Amino acid sequence: MYTINEISKICDLSPYTIRFYDKEGLLPFISRGKNGNREFSETDLDLVKLICCLKNTGMQIKEIRQYIDLCMQGPESVDLRKEIMQNHRKDILRQIEELKKNLNIVNLKIAFYNTDEGSRSFIAKQENK
Image (cartoon, rainbow, N blue to C red):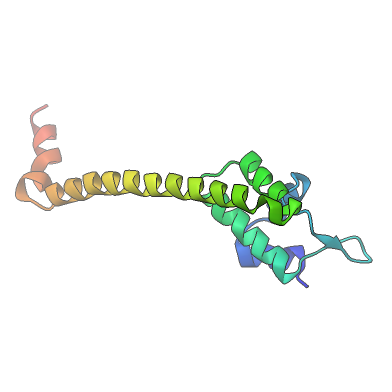
């Protein structure tokens, strides 16, 4: 079993964020010890990692909650969960394509600055003022 502080370090989240996820219904299986503190199993840790992945790739909390609610329903919701993941995968691939386009523009600007003209461009503009 893990403590909230251990989960916090493993997942690079604040304990506050983990408590927020719990209050939002994203961690339905979290148990509490005799002292009332949250105790996380290996399965809980995997769920927190999945939540981080989904959040980091743009899924909204309400969508993550919907996915977890479907998980709670058991095997009859597998098709819906799979559809959610497939749609999210498409969103991630779109994000990757946008990032590639932006990276190309940044690379072009860096290449320009590596030329004689680019390295003089700011100085020349300042001298012409």
